[in-house]
Amino acid sequence: MASAYYEFYRGSSIGMALTDSLDELITSGAITPQLAMKVLQQGRALAFDKSLADTMVKQVKTKTTLKGHLRTYRLCDDVWTFIIKNPSFKMESNDMVSAPRIKIIACKNGDAIEAPKKQ
Image 1: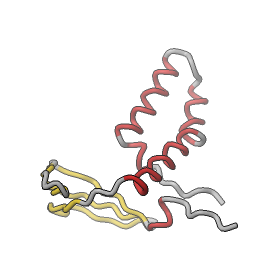
Image 2 (image 1 turned 90 degrees about the vertical axis):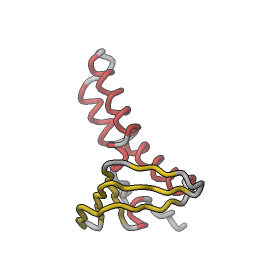
Image 3 (image 1 turned 30 degrees about the vertical axis):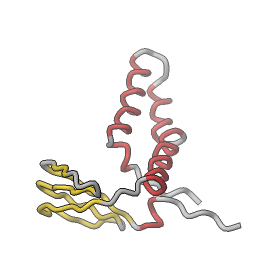
């Protein structure tokens, strides 16, 4: 069974760094564009998505409260997308963080990380 990892993290700063690094390697002639595409379509990129999803589940334990104005929401293929304007986050430590706009992408629990296989 193919794993069901979403490619959400490719748009993050870490994901963009992966893409930028591949572009630099192509420009310098160290790898071919075909090899870079292969990396993004399988192998390292899938391991990247899996590692970030696993880390989010296992290591991120901080609770936060979010307030803002819901501008857009949609459901497509069991994936929810929310765009929130002027969000403010109150952390457990009472620190406040705000931004002009955020996008939250949420999927069913079993879809983001493949369930352990029963033996």
